[in-house]
Length: 281
Image (cartoon, rainbow, N blue to C red; front, side, top):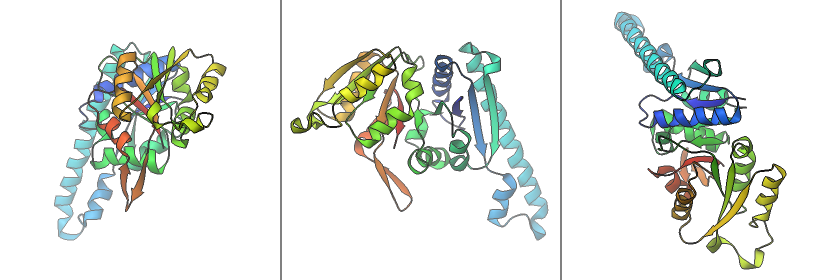
């Protein structure tokens, strides 16, 4: 079960995501695999109606140009990924690159279906285009757990924060990111006391559920309460605790094929100075 990293062209935070993926793999004592996905050049031309009749010569030239551009991009992504793996002192036999022909939306999740973790660069959490769509589709439609890397160039993932509100989404995030959580030296359970019904303190919101889950796995933990805006409180708490990863449920729904994230999820995803987000829907 490798840690998979989506190698995305043009991502400003690709380096930070690569560092995070390497450090996760080392903590999990597993391999790290960078994956790229680009569409079939010929298929792209056929969809536009090119490549027949009088257009054959020019279409062939265009096709060759697309192939060369894709190959150059793959080589650049692979070179940068391997350089970061080397700087993180990854064993060369534990770091791999796989280039897939297909749409990122369809291929990333499928390639990492049983991964220890699937990491996307920070840009994908707030961008449109094929890579932003791939992130949203993997999380919301395929319902796979994903990790959106933060922007910290030197992330400390020895401490992890779990945002707990007793919701099914929060429970799925904890369960599906179990291996990542268990790799931490210390876990902080964060809860917004303004959102807890005093008459239902023994319900699923009770942090004892998470505490018992962590105790069985022999993970040191502490509980931190906060009040006010949920997203701002979580971001401040993770910063104060020096946590490199925040585990949280992602809220949202699909409307006419447009994925709409809830306010808290959207704020966390778009934060420029937050931790990596290990999320599930």
